[in-house]
Image 1 (spheres, helix red, strand yellow):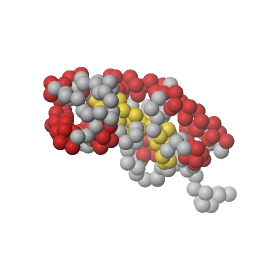
Image 2 (cartoon, helix red, strand yellow):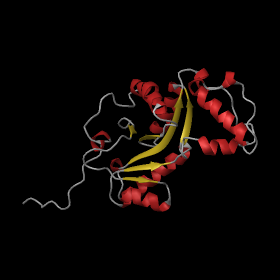
Image 3 (spheres, helix red, strand yellow):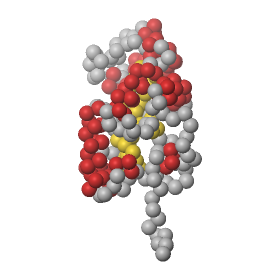
Image 4 (cartoon, one colour):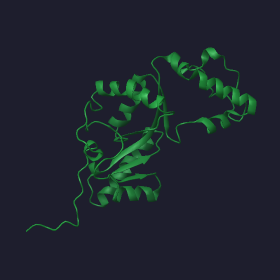
Length: 223
């Protein structure tokens, strides 16, 4: 298996060149120049196709595959218990219809106040389900996972071990709570499975992503 998966953190030192997007032009730019690529991927099959496609394009430019880290966005909503996550499913309702009556006993506990506010705004403004999620959705087009830590990590591990990605760009649904929950609940489970480091390998983003420092083409050749 490859080295541990990656979670992007702010760059330090020698910059790392990232490209964002999955268009034809974006793929070509990533394969030729980038060292990291951010991409919205929602199915494992789509992620694997994207991964293989970029590997093939990189070969055409004489670049090794380890020179580029593919990191789809991930919005992970994690709870300590099923009760924390709530248990009301809106998938069976018309997205262009009104929000149905939801008893408070089925609200997600950590976001009880926020849920009350959303329900109140929906009633006062006559918002449809679609208008509610367009206004309040936090994934910004990225894949969303909702579950217990072990369930979140099961999916992350599956995608990583199936060569759908090299790591994840974490998109918390809210800050700082969403990120704090991920660090407190998901990261330890990743570490238990030896999928994520317990200490950083270096002091820069480049070192921690396992990327080689580019040669300085302006440096004078030694004789």
